[in-house]
Length: 354
Image (cartoon, rainbow, N blue to C red):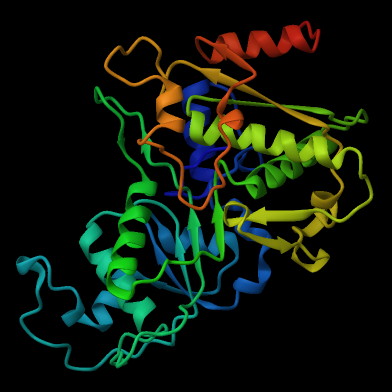
């Protein structure tokens, strides 16, 4: 389960295969945008997709059929992208490009040339999906927006964490609020720590178990990660849900989205093919969180604030829409690295590998 959103599942599986030296299939990979495959009610809408990489291929792999990219929008409305003087058009297109009305916006991952993406997305929001329209007054509401991955930062080769998609989303929210005086509303917020992401992950795990002919139900899930406000918070949030639901089996699952401020009940016609209704009736009763110290969380960096300050102090790194609970940021286990995490799980499950 990765919050990455800049490629299709097969590309990520190929990358993991090269790194791990073990064959990984796309069915074993879950991207931040993967749960959108369930929400078929969006698939026939005309969507504006923001991100980087093969965004059209990514959107098609999810199920979208009518896709507009930021570059397509910029080509149709060249006078809207004016920040970079070197990219300003010298001549208007000889034949105007007509695009259909945009019905929803999907934010896949952090893009390049942020100023262009921010400007054009704001234009679409303020014009009800048609930048050709001149907004004479602010709209009372805007078209649906879906955000995949709200990680504020991530760790690369640099000495300090790098900007993540959460920074881009934060910029978009603040610009929209400054212009309109209103909050940007999300139809869905996906990726860790969204509870819906963990629902979908359990669904895929059960599919893997069924494909291997495993008969014994999976009761305990383990979530390993290096980020307290995504990996650990999300795992503990899902564990809380499992504990609450274990005493009320048979009731319909309400998939909490957009950080608990909105909910969307998943109807059976929105489930994923052969996994119909499987999302509703999981066997897991707990989800254990395991924190590794090789990424965003690194206790050896004296110049970084402790995790308590990062989650409870003025530098709270979670997304604004997630209802914060400090208890959910405490991992069940802390280990040095992924090898130690696997060894821990073997020990807890009393499993002896051949």
